[in-house]
Length: 96
Image 1 (spheres, rainbow, N blue to C red):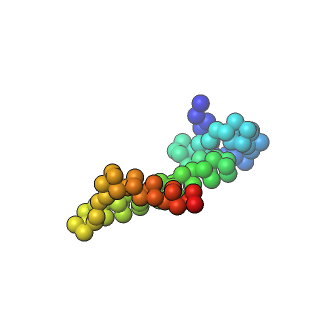
Image 2: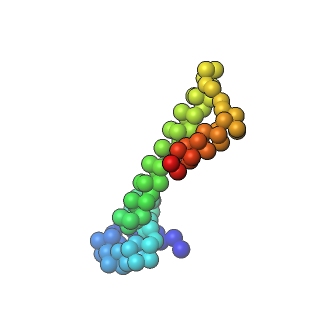
Image 3: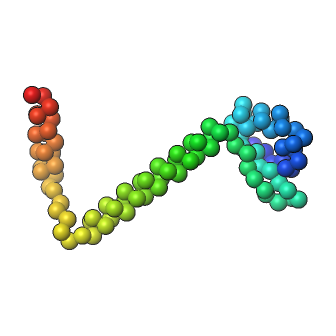
């Protein structure tokens, strides 16, 4: 259930909001004069959100680089056989 509270509850009912955020894991949406003002979330959820964003940005960067490489006419593509032969050679070298 979405928890929408006036921003004054942050001061007047802090323990109640803290319980919702930390114990129940729910974000609390705060309003000021009837309009959305901010969201309170736990530090753990914030950290996950930031890490997920960084991961998504990293993936986007890698995909952009792959697209550029694919567009390059000098890019050499390996066949299925070449790829697996290379992997087998490396595995055989590790056995020795």
